[in-house]
Length: 86
Image 1 (cartoon, rainbow, N blue to C red):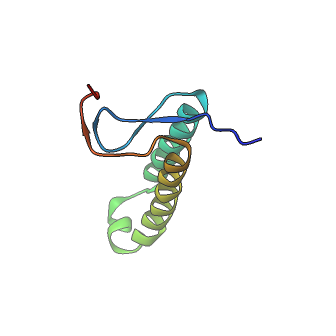
Image 2: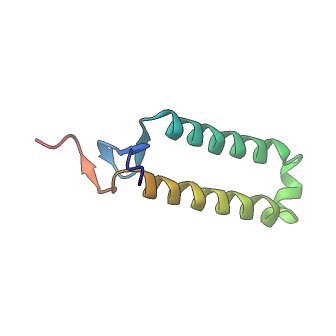
Image 3: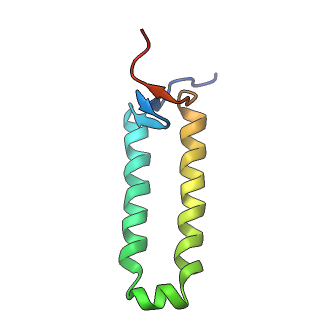
């Protein structure tokens, strides 16, 4: 049996998604916490600029692509909108 319940709804303004179930909110929270810990883990910005760009940038890109992919699979198909349909 295929679970077709959507976790994310397309935004009313712009392009993207808004979480509508606890699974969507949990996934969004995990993503935000990961980003905060990546920034907190960067002890000094000079080290990031000259030596650790890939150490910070690569995981953020991988997790961001994963998050967007899950949003695309578990949400409405996004289209550019400007308000509710009439």
